[in-house]
Length: 325
Ligand code: GLV
Image (cartoon, rainbow, N blue to C red; front, side, top):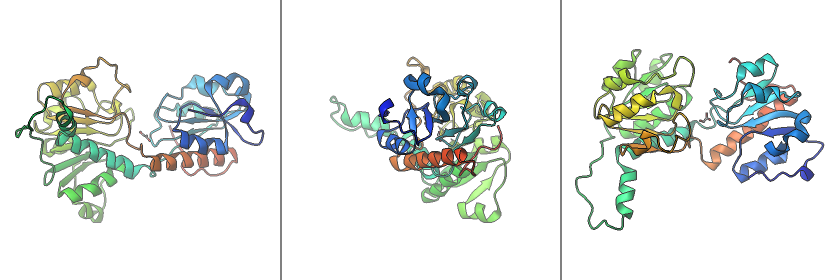
């Protein structure tokens, strides 16, 4: 919870609108730097607000941007910024900061946690282990082999490379689909093969991991035709954004055995409506968009956001600035 009260505001600190809430320890970091204006206080401080602090939700829409007459910067504490109306910001000369790189390792780790949990039925196993009616452990509750299988990464950017590095420890063959091909040296160091045709990756992979950015081009890039190409024994992992997947098609593919399972850190919307069919499927492992959610990584993201906001307010170069919408 935000702890600022109107009394603790300092005239020397910039006024920053808190659009997303933060863990209390990280909130302290924000409040050491800024007067963090809460939604309930906004009317009183509207004219003073020069920055918005946001996370991946809620969206930063044009109406919010337009409501602050002295806004200079949006400090987006995330690598993805599709939830920020960047075009509306640029039209008013408002700068937008974001937080790439600092979360690569944590997000790759979480992708692996989901892949392994989905493959080896960790959530089912946990339930069986705790269930008061369990008298003996079934010997036939098989999961899927991970070591020595084939991994397909869709979108091998900064996080994808971290994900790929970890696959080496599982002796996996790696295929990747990406806007560009890496050098021979990088490919050899990762045992990676470029597949310019997505279907080639989909039909050969035992695990398909989605790590592409959310753009109009990638919207629903995974839909029925793509799931149909995948192996029936394959597992699909999404650690990117829910909008990249046609969720109805994914539900159908999981229901009728077109694919064996899924591990999803992201959905569309988040959270899913409580009666959504994905929540009823036993072959899905879900996490609540926690790719970067370690205190260490989130502290790095918040500090980078603070640095971005300060730089913009001082008219300096930002650590990481969004350059085009
Ligand atoms: C998390 O999803 C991020 O974009 O940082």
